[in-house]
Image (cartoon, rainbow, N blue to C red; front, side, top):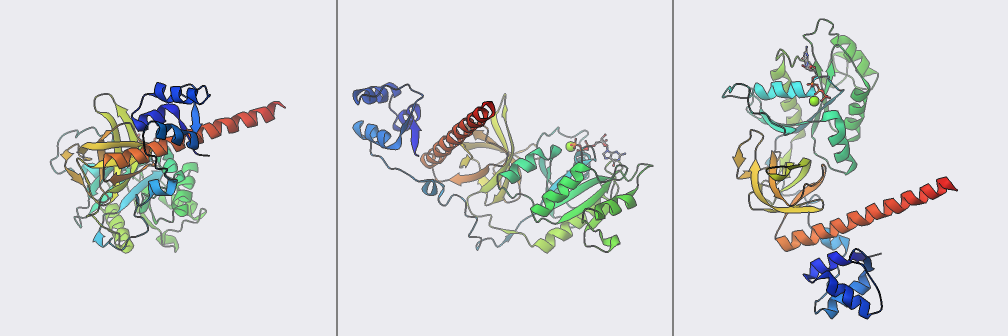
Length: 371
Ligand code: GTP
Ligand code: MG
């Protein structure tokens, strides 16, 4: 059932909530500002206040927002997006750090401390770029997958050679298989005296991951993030796999992307790390993501530089949101603020309804438990 909160109704009309309540009172109903009234009553009130009412259905609100079905204009090349997964402490972040530092040409000592969980590395061999996403404890990836977001083209499964296949390794294998994404195995910590890469390969076999040396088609590379061993080889294997995928996009259209993470920064306000997937995101664009909207005030690259735009497969920090969106929210550029407000207020309403429904559902089960 369509319904609206009195405050929100007043906001949308730019009227005072007390005036709405007064009109409702005239019709014989006593209400508080937080009460929810049905759509028919809301329409009556709005018309009484001299507004024209246009009711919109979900399909209309979301119409044309994501052009995911029509990919006929996706003809330009795109760099692969690689998600690094694996068991806790197997060296995902170390590996990414090593790959990134191998790439820092200026050689600045220490580098910039980045909190962004996504960055681009240029393969020294081919000069091609690869976008990496780090997954701390899989939380982000699981949240994204649960919300239907597809961000990754290739999974790099990191397995520590001294520890072998562990529960989260298996979980990562399941993720990759469910997402139907090709996987490359990085057998890490090969420098350790107790490293047993051969054991890792046979353990993987038990989970239906068959590496090439055991007759399968999964590529594995023995690496050491600590000693920078075989990092070029890993990048090369990723680039080869990416070539097979023939990833295409259209950089000319308005941007679409996915929020990787978002937070409220003390100094900068809401900051969202976004992976642009199609089109080009620019400073000044009006964006929506989940129930949040904003005008892009600044874009910060993975190197910490301020940039004017970000194209497909590029991760950027987006400043200018009114509030932080959620990981997994899809980002879209819309034509104007009115449209952005329409979409986000509709979604915010849906979100509240869902929350209310789950609370009453909880109450129901609580009552069942008591009886
Ligand atoms: P979570 O994010 O907590 O899941 O861990 P992670 O997979 O990102 O592991 P991280 O990179 O934080 O590394 C865990 C520990 O392993 C650290 O103490 C690293 O120094 C160490 N380590 C990572 N790679 C190597 C390696 O190649 N060789 C050795 N000897 N140690 C490594
Ligand atoms: Mg980590």
